[in-house]
Image (cartoon, rainbow, N blue to C red; front, top):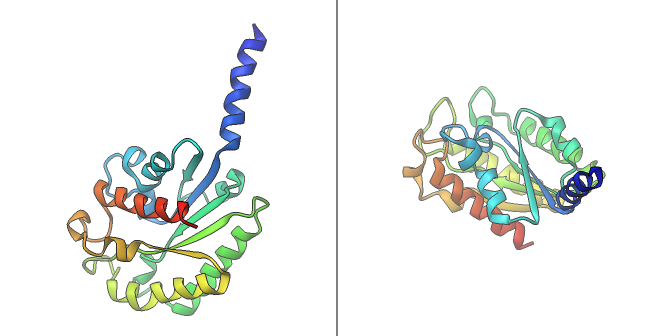
Length: 192
């Protein structure tokens, strides 16, 4: 009887350990703020569904150390929105801190493929978050970091610039926009 219970557990472990592990690292948008059922409609969850059984997507913006325990094969970083607040925005610090994050993730033994996302648009200035700094500060910095580190860029800004109606508070995507983010990222992951 013990063999019967051990074998299924072993098979589950083998299947899950063979999956391509994707970690989504980010801010409240990655967390799914503003989406009533984050565990069903947040972009990382939809991304997991789109990628299929060969992939396992993990996200938890509050647990940086969990990325190391997860040992991802791929890391998708979507940061920069909150950095546009006037009291947060310092270009040199943003690039230095982002580079430190890339360097830290590059030390993982799993040697993950790292993708950098251009942030989604800020359709109106709110809480100090503003589109001008996204466009003129964050996006160029992300592009420079990608070139410097030979990393792929995912253009969430361009992909969602006409979807303001799907950002109820003008900053955070609703379920429809989160699904579109997941589609854009899934395409980027599949098209190296």
